[in-house]
Image 1 (spheres, rainbow, N blue to C red):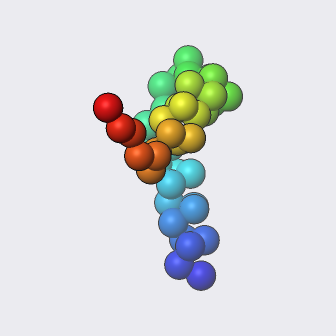
Image 2: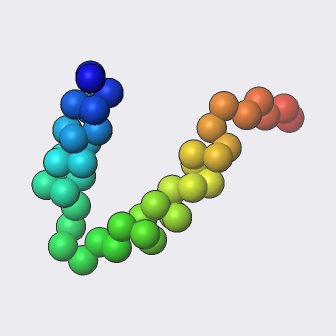
Length: 44
């Protein structure tokens, strides 16, 4: 499937460009506010 191809591609790219001292868990948690707030309508 095409979606599986993109999954493999993204995993390969992340591993290729991730700094050696990067902790994947911290990086994911650090990005969570951006992911969870995306698409919410802000007023004011």
